[in-house]
Image: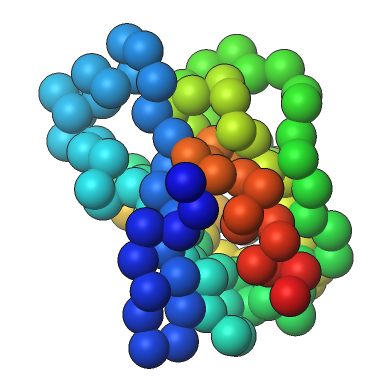
Length: 130
C-alpha cells in the first residue's frame, strides 16, 4: 500500500485502524486525520486532536517493526513511551534521542519512544532509512 500522498517535501503514511477500532470516530478521531508525514527533515505524527508530535529525523536513533504486546488502542503513554494506534497490527517503534515534546489531548508530554500502527510499516521504514 505504501504512502498515500506525496508532498513537496515528503510522504504521508496512514495510521492503521482495524475492526472495532474504526469506532474511534465517535471520539472525533477519524482515519483521515491520523497519519505520519515523513519529510527530509522531520517526522510529523497526528492522531486527530488526541496526539501530535514533530520528531527531527536526526533524533531517531532506531526504527524497526514492533511485535510487542498491545493492550489498548488510541493514544496511551507513560514516562516518555507512547502508543498511538488504531490496531495491534503494523506497529513500528521509533527510539528518539534527545526526547522531543509532543501533545496528547492538548497536554504537553515528553516523547522518547513512539509505537505507532501504520497501514504499510515496511514502506515507511524503507523510506525513513533512505
